[in-house]
Image (cartoon, rainbow, N blue to C red; front, side):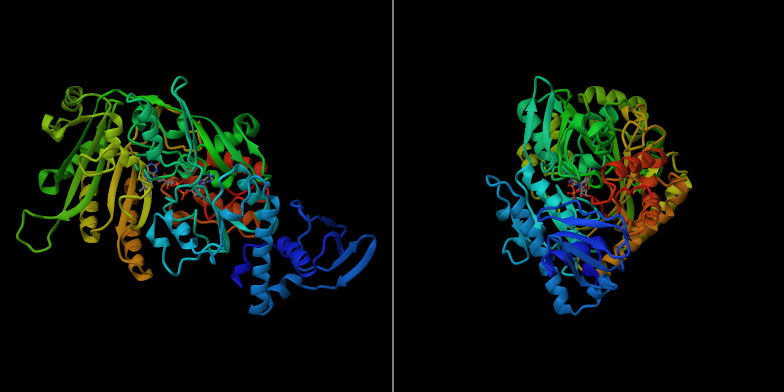
Length: 601
Ligand SMILES: Cc1cc2nc3c(=O)[nH]c(=O)nc-3n(C[C@H](O)[C@H](O)[C@H](O)COP(=O)(O)OP(=O)(O)OC[C@H]3O[C@@H](n4cnc5c(N)ncnc54)[C@H](O)[C@@H]3O)c2cc1C
């Protein structure tokens, strides 16, 4: 039964008429004044009446044909036997594929780019960009089909045909969504997989580039490095993350304190909207452009590419990774970091990573202790770095021998934790270094944690063992940009963003439950120390625990559900603006997922 749940009554109606009655023409709903025309390629089937129970009278070529008094038609559908259900599905599916083929341009055929489960490459295509093995179980719902467009016309026909057949579309660029929203759904769906959209066109004179959404961060950074050793981009540092999702959620990296987010450097974009129109910034207008710069583009359309402004970087940067255990005064250093990390020189980004390791200072078997790593990238040489550190964070005791100088692209390779000596070309590898089952959550730190709070959290971490806490310092440029400049609102007033990270290697629901539980418990124990009213979170660290939208028929319910997570990701003002924009550009909520922006009720 739930196979039908993504189809609205209107879709049932259209599909019924098209496929069971093989009908094109005009029909009216008995008892209402509503009449509709169905053309072979019609995509504007939008009755204003709720048609869950209805009677149909069809009018065709001036001959009125009473088809039937079809009372409770949708109920009849749903109650039909599994044989007719599968016929129904096949019918929808075939109609959808037919529509795609019909709509594709003669010189841009789409048929070879459609993968159904019968195709021998289906699983490979599906799994290549699954970046969280938690959603690669046999029990994970699979898509009806996958479309891998190579031309914009393929994206346009995918949207128009999906609308016509009531198909739920998931948009995938790099597949790194932490909750798998680009390739998993509770109801039947297909994937629009954009990995072929990966061109990067650099204009070094302008210091700009057009980057397509299926390009990975690593490919963009390598492309820039290939042209200039003194340019870079404030991207994330994980090379395999896709541009589509990354920019759609803001995008941050270790130049954030110097240059802000990726979306603070976007000049233009191309999007295909719900009507299949290809729009640039001028055509889409400033509201929609604002929304797709951090508001979760999947709620608004299919972004094809972004134009970015690339930034200058010094020829030499310096990195270090200094680790201190509990016995080496980690508690005090963690506290001290929280006091100063956001106030340091803007050229300096020190990430703090707290995890649990074997305690080698005791004979007790399996004893564990806390370790805090201070993992840094400095936009300058080691001499200047040492002077900054001696002035601002002498407690860490940084030494010249802890520091390594390199160019900026090499620092990305280092920061991604490739083995020492790995060439910069590694940024081009589409295969992630590590592929595992995972869960991520996020928080914002506004005040330093009290020493006793830090001690308490350390104790809990040792108890849970697996979750790792990563603190990314804010301040600098981040604090200078208005919280409403982009949908991403977490600017001044934040010391750091915290990531909760739990990885595990065993498959299975029960194993996952254990790791999800310990992550949630640690998250709960952090409540007194993090942002409140609302507790703020980062969209790119997607977390369905903070609220989901069932995208049911009631707009009021959708809005209420969307508000729960929306305000936590975007704060009230930005969320309200996103809702207003969504209501204008996609009033029927075609572009939806479990955490999309709802329309106004
Ligand atoms: C290992 C790892 C490291 C990470 N490091 C960072 C980091 O340093 N900085 C940071 O900011 N984030 C980081 N993230 C988070 C990452 O930015 C987000 O998960 C991002 O959404 C992934 O983008 P994607 O295109 O790879 O994912 P996808 O799963 O393809 O997409 C994510 C979301 O965006 C939507 N979407 C994708 N493409 C489009 C499009 N073209 N048009 C409309 N909607 C689209 C999808 O439908 C989905 O909802 C990291 C994630 C991982 C797994």
